[in-house]
Image (cartoon, rainbow, N blue to C red; front, side):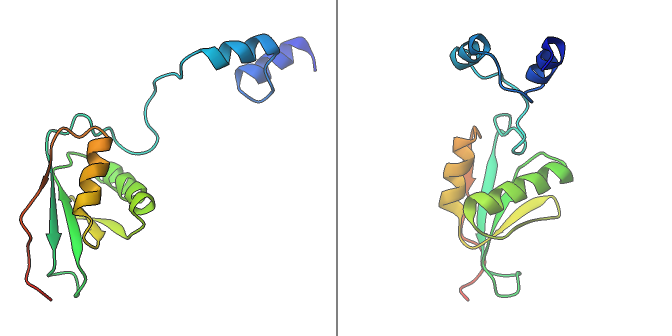
Length: 128
């Protein structure tokens, strides 16, 4: 490979770096950049989680309110939560809904992502 072309490929991460560059990369800290795994939750002051037993065709659901994001960011977050929680998740009217009672797991997950305050609201709906 020609030196100039090799430098171009290495700068784009398409070719293996030389020993000196590999050592420098190993010792450096990872760069901070925008997260590709959903919106930043550290700026959210309060998230409310509410377990519901009614209004979902007989299914139980957990409602997540207080997320100040647009539709695209909420859909991205729903996609991430589907993978993380192993359940169905969708956006409905600006709130996020997940199948099942996931209030405790979601509280831990949101706190781990940097949310300042996560509140579990009183149990809603009737037994059914």
